[in-house]
Length: 471
Image 1 (cartoon, rainbow, N blue to C red):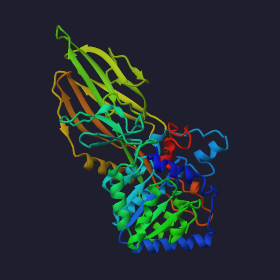
Image 2 (image 1 turned 120 degrees about the vertical axis):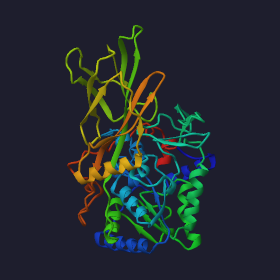
Image 3 (image 1 turned 180 degrees about the vertical axis):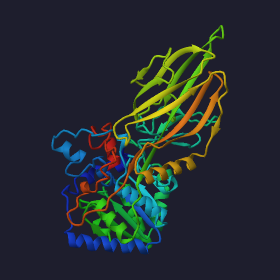
Image 4 (image 1 turned 90 degrees about the vertical axis):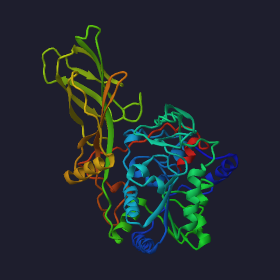
């Protein structure tokens, strides 16, 4: 994930310029700097935040130049750590969620990210207020109509290549492409242009968790200086841009931002993750019209043939035991084929067992079956349903809340499709303990299971290859 040939040379020159030694401001100085930053942000009229890999290390996603960073370990000949949980279950950090609150408060105007982990979007930053310079591992885009698709699974390709899915717009149908840049790819104007625009307008560009070494992205914050704006850098290592900054803070981004939020008297919102799945029943009458051949499938709502990354297995049972055999579906696609009498009504009970990183272990869903009756079709307002689920999850401080958001019928082959939404993570962020705090101490609530894994799909290549996009 890098840039064109000219930028590639700049990057190679930059790699050795700044050491990987971590620096920590003494506690008294750190407190003073946090207060100074909070005052600057409070006075700001156009705050822009520029983020790097350092804001995601507390999510279990490694950086590149830190003591345990990917490049550091590779240079020392050490093995890369095993991911504790899958990349797609990573949970936003305290910093991610604080930025969401700052945006909702009208203080933060724009976010520019060099990361491909998708955590800014997943945390709740509006797409129109976000530039993902190097792409998003969970995003597909249509090259024809421009539609974007934010997935719950990691897209299988990088380098702006075609994927196996097509645009869902009936008038389009073009083959989709991934959005993560490879070594030879230039920064896309769609992301770069608004980033430049907002940096020029900014009175403060706050750089969080970035070594500011990847060009041309690292030069974006400096554009604020020409209009009288200021640059603030929060990072554990020194950066080549420190000399241009009005304030440099050496500390964990989570700790610094938690202190800023306290000074501003702003709460850090909980992270609520909602995932979707579909229950599909395909059925057809036998030739003598006495029986129905039917297929049950628990499927992804994102695309046909897409995997369901958060469901591990499905247990199928029936309320009427007579004549029905229970089944365990433990391989994707989760599909069960049966044959029953046409006039037979019954109820299936599905127990969905969730995978690692989900806050609830399972969900039971009742599926009534009556092939003689027509299916009631509806399509509820998804945003309204999602907000109700979030409110309930916060109130109950647990996950598992679910709702049906759509039911439709397809005539050929005859299929009844029901789409469900379920809360799979609820994460509360505790306040930091002064002075003794490290980034790892900014723990989420212990009673909430979270996903903190990372994908190594792009990490086992050399420095000049695809990982250069993720600082």
